[in-house]
Structures are given as structure tokens and as C-alpha cells.
Image 1 (spheres, rainbow, N blue to C red):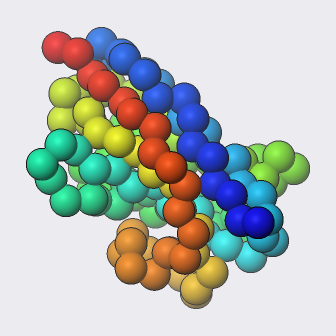
Image 2: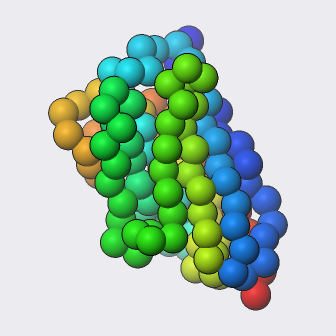
Length: 124
């Protein structure tokens, strides 16, 4: 059974940091790109970042560059999202997803597997 388990959400003050984890199971981790997406209240889901589990290549949405860092621990089949200098616009439910196509993309339509979300709230 394919599972993606996102965790690490919570309440953080503006300017603070948080690290999310996405634990994957039920598929060959190295064959997939793992992406992070988020959805704020009343807004559409948007791509945050993704990483190629095999080669470690990464891709970020422009608004996340310099503040967020994605990484993976292939021995643990886990992808992390380190979020720094957070602000209220980062408040959202964060989801991780897996995609087995070629290249890096934040187009959610290509992602086959999705985990449940983890809520991140940034207080000002």
C-alpha cells in the first residue's frame, strides 16, 4: 500500500522556522520525485518545492527560494522541507506527493500519490 505521511506542522511565530517530514512507503522511493504543495484557506493549491529522490536535484517555486530547503534521506525514504523566515503567507496545509515522470515539476496534475496534509500556522 502506498503511503505518504506528512508531519511536523504546527504553530510558529513570524520569522521562525519549522521542518516538515514526508515519510514514504509502498513504492520504490528512488524512482520518484517527491514534491511539497500547500493550500491556504480560500486559495488554490500551489507547488512549493520538489526533489528527485535518485539524484537529489531540487526545484523551488520562486517565492520559496532562499527561505525553504528541500532534502531527502533515502535510507529512511523520507523527504524534508526546512522552512525559515516564515511569514503569515506561509500559513497553509502542506501536502507531500510523489510523481514518477521525467524531470522536476510543481504541476500537481502529474503527481500520482498524495499524503494527508499537515497544518502550518504562522502567527504575526
